[in-house]
Length: 226
Ligand code: DC
Image (cartoon, rainbow, N blue to C red; front, side, top):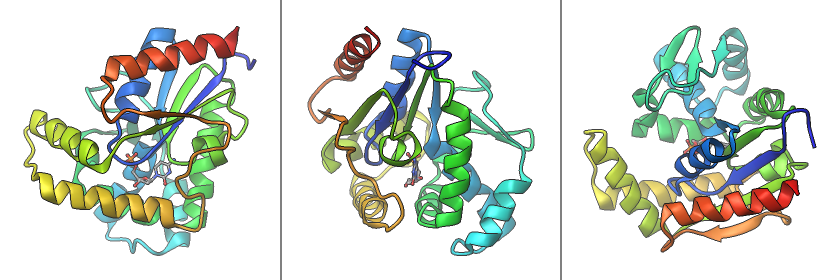
């Protein structure tokens, strides 16, 4: 066991509910929660704002290094990342940012920067961390690994619901298309692609209510810390 508890890694494809489930689990067991997708999204947002090329690994790493990264808790409903004091929330959900984040996530320098920051944030434990490569690359030594899956159809349906709740436009067919493309990009890349770690528990949430998924992870947690 680490100083503050274990590391719980939750990986899985886009829109599967890793953040919602991860936050609920963290709250139940008194752990902190870190969304690594938000980190990629924040850098992508800043790169778009600065008009930086999304293929330029060196410039993107220099930009990432020049920023003051903070992870404020409870700063807003969706605010978990702030850059140079600016809290980023809804802007990170925009489709252009989703696409750009998946694109910069291919670059080895960007990935290394993120991995260092993520390891630093989780090293002492007591943390639920979600992403694509947490169990395989960032914390291959995580004490509990979950691979959360659901059909693309189910994920698109949930995403439409989320967007509508936020008062944003949502077209099911278009969102399904985005999800399928992002899956292909995140699983097909050379550097730390999305895949289930051999020792991860596979949970398919296609037709399982969210509360039940949370319950299953809390039970796995209890067994892991026994
Ligand atoms: O989980 P998300 O949709 O917020 O993530 C945005 C993008 O960031 C995703 O398409 C791929 C990338 N990502 C990654 O490559 N590795 C992670 N650990 C988290 C996210």
